[in-house]
Amino acid sequence: MKKSIFIAVLGLTAGIASSYGQGFVGFSSYLANGTAGATTTIFGGSTLVPAGYTAALYYFIGTVSDPVDNNSIASITSLPIGLTALGFTQSFATGSATAGYFDGGAATIPGYTAASGPITFEVVAYNGASYDTSTIRGRSGSFTMTGIATGNQGVPYLGDNGTAMPNFFVAPVPEPTTLALVGLGGLASLVAFRRKQA
Image 1 (spheres, one colour):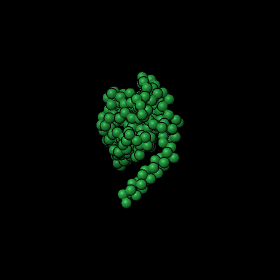
Image 2: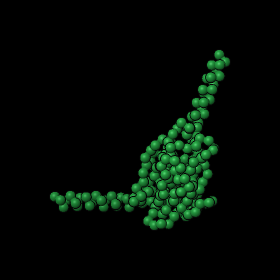
Image 3: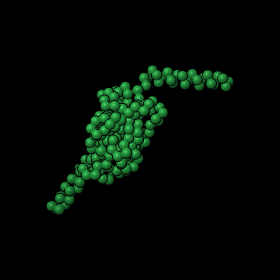
Image 4: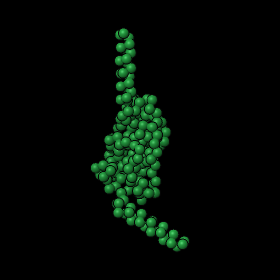
């Protein structure tokens, strides 16, 4: 009887531990990609983002695709799709980092265990109080690591295994009226083209 109770308690404890697992990843673009780094640049030039910008981490346990079209301001400034905001942020150009880089500590990923396997990340950068409300912002697009640390030893940095963390841009967020005018212009062009063919 005592043995079966002990086994039941042990199983319950293991279940609780696995359901509350956590992983760790080094949140740094300065040391990302095996210390090769990944920069954040202002769209339309070669100016790296200065101090005053914030980087934030999004994640998904598993593999998800959320690419960025680096030729499209609307794509660069859009919200991440399929990933969750971790609530872990770091300022750019602080500590050992220079312009265009952030260099934070270890981010804790809730729910990640040694058996979780791949994990997808996305980094965003913005100039205001939050990504959603900023007038200048951008995102890296998704990249997947084959695994991350589940203890405090050997914590990998972003892009250290699996897909590299890409360089990315920030840009002014297009105003809804601008997007609407672009859409109307495209529609007018299509109508004119059809009339010309008829």
